[in-house]
Length: 133
Image (cartoon, rainbow, N blue to C red; front, side):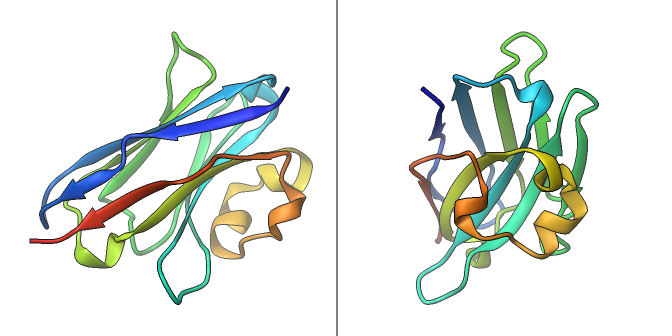
């Protein structure tokens, strides 16, 4: 069974940091891209960051570039992290990870033009990130 499980969200003050985790089971991430999306109340889902395949190529939304870092654990190979530093109130949202193949591994494209939800093979349940003083 293909499954993604996110964790690591929470409440943090502006300027603080969080690390989100996305653990995949039932699939080999060397053949997938994992994309982090977020959705704030009343707003559309937006792409945040993506890491693709065995080469681990990455892409970021302009709004998070220089503050967020996506990575895969070399030991726990089916875990993807999103390190979020210098968090801002505008980063408040539910964060989701999703795994996809084929055209969904073109990270710059999927981050800037999020595909339809049903295009992906698996989605996590989401984790809330709240940035507030």
